Image (cartoon, rainbow, N blue to C red; front, side):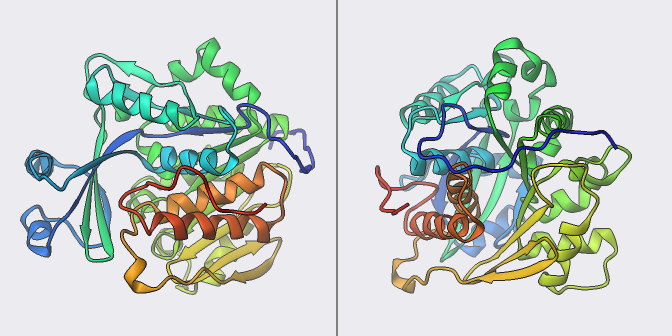
Amino acid sequence: MTLCHSNSRRLREDPPEGVLFGMGNPLLDVSAVVDKAFLAKYGVKLNNAVLAEEKHMNMYKELAQKSSTSFVPGGATQNSIRIAQWLLQKSKATTFVGGIGKDEFGDKMERLITLEGVNVAYHEDPSAATGSCAVLVVGDERSLVAYLAAAGMYKIEHMRKSETWALVEKAQYFYSAGFFLTVSPESLMLVAKHAAATGKTFMMNLSASFVCERFKDPLMAAFPLVIYVDYMFGNEAEAKAFGRVQGWSTTDLGRIALKMAALPKICGTHKRIVVITQGVDPVVVADNGKLLMFPVLSLPKEKLVDTNAAGDAFVGGFMAQLVFGKNLAECIRAGNYAANTVIQHLGCTFPKKPNFSY
């Protein structure tokens, strides 16, 4: 294994511009309340996340015709970066990189994200449409069907461009949802190696069970990405899928989190920390061989609007405190606040100013 530098975490009162760098699949969320018959019509399972297939194409047209459908900038990583930016309340403290089309939806998404204070460095592909994600809300549960389009055509050449790489060099923390493994694992590896060599922090999210099952090789094979991960996030279903793929004979979340944390790690500022959310149940954390549990914020059922992006919001809140150099308990407190706020709104939306005390 290669040698690398290690920088100890330090407290910051004012995070520098570009301190947090996200890379992923920017999508325009097409969100609507539907019934179970609608899910059955398009072969969508309740509370699941999948990539769109041919059978789903008419679904986007049908949703666009609904008067109640809303359009919100989305995509797992982009959501987390938006939440972190919202909590940091400092223009361009965060950067986001991904692929969009050269079209009206792409222009709209870039304009909205920029207004929120995120520094975007999209790659525009004139040959493809901006990606979208159907957010199908049934009661207090949701299913996601992502049509990547231009988001799925991102190439490492854009990451290597001098203006993009300057943003990488400026950042101290890097984050990507596992969905980006379906698009450009080479870009992830390039940035992960940079983080390891410079003592910066590299974070990933398991994101969906299918990522653990279908993209095991980029994570675990000859040049495993997982050895570079300082923080690994996921929910209970994703963690169990990961454990199942690894052949671990347990479904106990605590044991799985400890095993994930103990997987080989090339270097970094600390041993790998694994953070597993499980809805209303406590957050499970594996840190340096210890298992920790953190309760979540309670919310009356009548205030629950949409669980979409709750996990993304949690990670965004967590990272907003991490870049200040705060401890695990404070990072999770911010994550719980962000998730609790977002689930009281439709889609990944939130008030203009956070009501969170640092």
